[in-house]
Image (cartoon, rainbow over all chains, first blue to last red; front, side, top):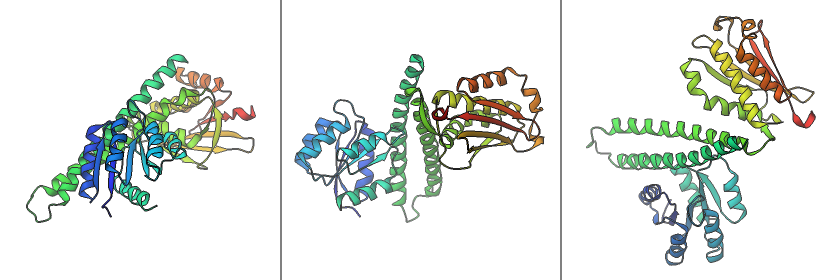
Length: 121
Length: 218
C-alpha cells in the first residue's frame, strides 16, 4: 500500500503536519495546505492523487473548496474530514462530489483504506 | 427557548474544537507509536513501558471522543421543538453524559431496548430532562454497586414505555413508596405531564415506568 500523492487541507496545522508524517511513514507522498486558497493554488502545481479536506475551516469552507476542486480537477477524489458528531455534513459533501468522509479523530488504518480505495476507484 | 438555543450553539461549537484537540492527541500518540514500532533490536529498554502509556492515551481519546460526540448531539437538541427520536439512542446519550454522576454514586445504568429502533415524536429537550430526572431520582435511592436496567418498548397503541428496573430489593436504600412524596418525584411527574406522558412507581417490582405518548398519535 502507498506510493500515492496525498494533499492534506486543514487549518489545524499540528493535526495536518503530524498526520502527513504518519502517511509518509506509510509510503505516501504528502502536500499540506492550511486554508482553502492555499489548497487550490497547490492543487494545480502538485496534482495530488487524493485530497483529504477538513470541512470546517476559516475563510473558504471545506464544502466551498470541494466545489472548486470538482471544477478545477474533476477526477481528483476528495475525502472529507468532519469534527462534528453527526454525519450530516459528510453526506452533504458526498452529494456535491466528495468520494467519502471520515470523522475526527481518525483511525489511521481506516484513512489508509479510504485513500487506497479512492485512488483505485 | 432563545437561551437554550444559545447554550446549545456555544456547546456544539466547543465540541467541534474538542474533536480537533482529540485528533491532534491521537495523531501525536500514533506517531510516537509508529516510531516505537521501528525499534525492533531491543536497544530501547522502555519500549514496552512507552507502548503501555500510549495505549492509555488512546483509551482516553476514545473516551473523550464518545463524550464529545454525545455532547454535540445533545447541544443540537434544542434546534427543533418537535422531532422524531430513536429512544434507545437518546437513552445511550443521557447515560454517556451522566456517567460521572453515576460513577460518583457507584451506580451503573444498562440500556436494554426491546428493539434497536424505537421512534418517538416528541419535544427532545423535555424527553432528555425526563430521562435524567428519572435516573437522578433512582441514583439517590440506590445503594452502592446497584445496576439499573433501562428497558424500552413500544406497545400496540403506539405508546412508548421506558422501565427503570433496579437489580434487587436489597439494592434500594428506601421503599419506592417513600419517593412518591419527594419533591424530585413531583418535578418528574410535572415534566412527564408537560409532554402528555405519565410516570409511575411500582414498589413491589422496584420499577419506575415512563409512559410516553407519540405526538403523532396524540
